[in-house]
Image (cartoon, rainbow, N blue to C red):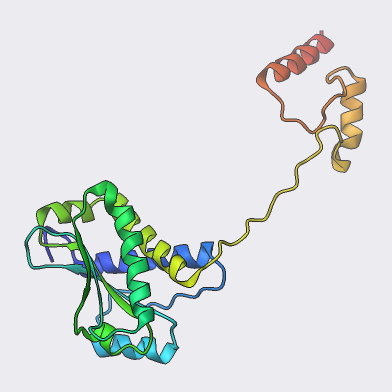
Length: 223
């Protein structure tokens, strides 16, 4: 805890944001969270879940503490695989790119004998997302734009590492405004013959000026 913020809340918000963005916007990816509620898990429970799921990569998301100047840093195991190094580089670069606008200190990529990156059976990286006990960083973490930047940075790093492709957005066919819809054909002919419309562009949106003309014709017909 620090400055009214709780690491567990920030970590969960970032994790859920990453999962939502990756799964909704990119093809062929499924994100499994070790928790999705306010539940405490021991470190071993977390790596056991990841290992049992057969995950292709593990990202352990935290906030830092310990004072100092604050900043962002990432960790891989001291004897990490080449893929863990690639994942760390992809994540760190992408996240710092997103954080640049907020003047966050870059504490660089590091190695350490941490449980989460040591006991995982897949490429693993631990991200320390600013210092919760440093006033400047706590102020940043209280700004959702910074949280969003952290989410986007993690997502961009994962996309880079796996080479993910964006989902295609279904294109809506453009309507031919010169053709009448079948359901409106009879009433369109009736209103055109009565002089309310000129018979042109039946599928086009109507402007306020055109509506004024229609209303004027209707009023005059009632006199």
